[in-house]
Image (cartoon, rainbow, N blue to C red; front, side, top):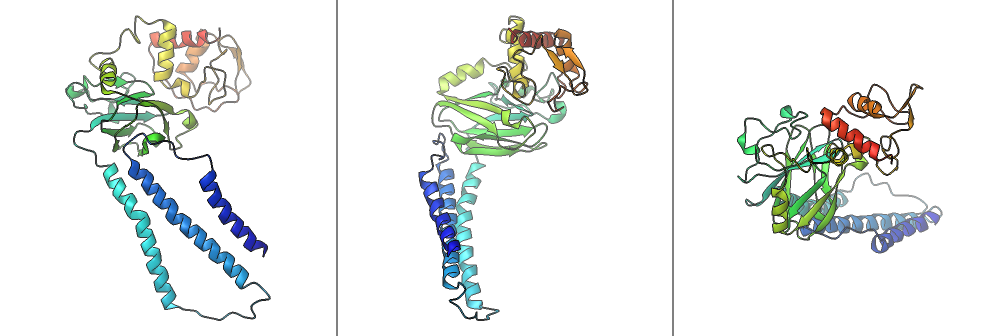
Length: 365
């Protein structure tokens, strides 16, 4: 009898939790209402099976409990029951899969007038690229990636010279315009995901995956990696800003390209500290090093400059400019105690190194 009560409480509790729990899907901000409807169908069908099967189990436990049944009839085969189970199961599985297959077919088949946006993922940062005034994205390939060509643009393809390059975790998109996302990864498996858009797709190294959506509500939305991609996975976050078309056009025109790199925003006119801050974001340093003292994959930069740092081998050293330059150039030479040895080498110019050190030094004040 106790088992029957437990089964019924589990069923009723699960249904109540589904309807009264405060955790629900975020408000939809794209055209993919069909995605929500497909999830609803999945919940309904699996919910029906959950209630029926557990209810039947509770009934059999109660009906055939010891003391009420003297023996069991031996029936090795029941072709009629098998046929009904096969037919009913096939119908429910078809009802479960058909809507999803239909929606997915539309999900990867964008309209002909959709604007292309390339998303480049690497540990642990996002980069973005738009077509230039010619309306064409230049060719790109992983073999062209270098410190001076982070997007891997084909040097022989002139179509890529005017493509706006976004070395930031923030992506802006025009409202009410179809967007085709072209996804690439240069290291491990990633997944670009914006919950409010109901849009996500795996990013497999060596191939380009795609999907499309139309952002319908202006606002700022969180983007994240939805595949475990290393120790900095939880910090691989970004933002997608949806705004009216005129504001978007003004923003994208101001972005640098291969033929017109940024000068004032991230070049000679910027202060070393401001340039260092921009580099920390564009090079994904802040994915592993916090600037507010909070714990992360690597040591926090707040108050780091001037302190004495201990290493895993028992040695110690004072954090000064020479220390930081050495650690950035040769991150595996010494491992800071209490942190994993996962920092990759960063190919930076002397000016960029100086700016990054200046920024870290400023966080000690």
